[in-house]
Length: 114
Length: 113
Image (cartoon, rainbow over all chains, first blue to last red; front, side, top):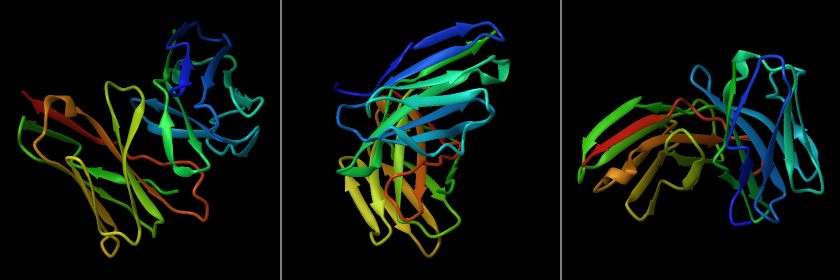
């Protein structure tokens, strides 16, 4: 696709429910990143994929958070048993082997946990 | 990666004026990038300056890098209302070009028409 696509754009859920956030990176981009942005914490790194493997998952805040990437393309970030502090904008980015330093971001998913 | 710290936290100017934002970091870097974010959503890459470069231009943007002071500045000349956004720097360390970016709190720029 033309850019990084994230869905849904907005998600409202009840505390304790599980949610899945989807990221479709730019076609051909081998690296994929998840970040989250909240008022109190700013922009935080969550996890990085190179192909289907995750060399760096150091930013996942708890074992309620997991992510996978299949076929070297689409990635899903899953949050189990959501808590109110999980409310944030979740941003996905991808980069290409030609210019690995530069990350292209999607518009994000705004998650609200009630 | 290390976190950059942007200064000032907020900047308010009139259209046509220049805007300067600063970024400081702590350890040696490979490169430093600047990103813009509109309305709290996706970030857009603006410019990348490598550690062996001192200045770089892109349109109305001018970035400088002073590795001895561990600081960078982003200058937007002849600002427009559309430049209103948050601006983040991302200093990059490490031996690989891949890897996470670490952002500070950003500078919120407001350009009044």
